Amino acid sequence: MKAYLDTNILRQINKIPETITIELTCSQLGIMELISGMTSEWEYRIRKSSLMNILARDISIVWESPATLQSKAFALNIPDYDVPATKVLMEKIIKTTTLAEAEKIEVDLGGNTYAISTLTQYDTMLMDESVSALSRTLSTSKEDRQSLRANSYTPATIRVYSEMTIVGFLHSLGIEKFTPEYMKAIEHYNNSNPLTNYLYCLTSYVLDAMANGRQPGRNDGHDITHLAYSDGVDLFISDDKIYQRLQQDLFTVKFLRFEEFISLHS
Image (cartoon, rainbow, N blue to C red; front, side):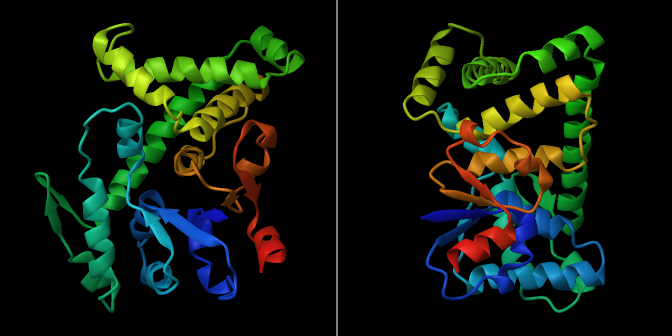
């Protein structure tokens, strides 16, 4: 059995009993969020300790970014230097003793220079973009909201909308429907249907937001994206409320809060 640890759980690794037998895993996105949040000496020490605990507990890290996961899902070759840069930053930050020392670390890759400040700015930009995109659901008309509330979506509905999202993603990369490149990408995707939990989460979140007029939370985009790492995972551990609102039977992974996870598996 394998459990994925969300970023808020990575800050609590020291509370997970050593005797637990479940394989624990996290992601480049989680590591990036830990590093990007090193904005004060206090946060630096907490987050550096978390990074050290991840290595000490031999927690498996999926060194893939959401971008590289999407790229591989459709057999596309899109390099992302954020991944190796995050790994090197983690290795170097662990060796520092103060935030000031850690802030001086620079990693040059792919024509870019990466530092803690780079990840902080990038993280803020991603949150701003996701809030902007998800806020478009607020423009849904009153009639459409009423219709959505009166007609609950089904797994079939989610699947159809998710397939539309895939088409939109490929279109954003300049890959038009029914071209040879498009057909190759879809064929590759259909071989294993990766990212299904992520796509279903995004789709159900948007439909719920449209029906209820809910203002997106600042970190909702990241929370949704963490589901991209849930393929082949049995348990998804997080205390973020967004996951508790999801319709469990849509997903191949079971969502548990931290205390539930410890109670059931320690």
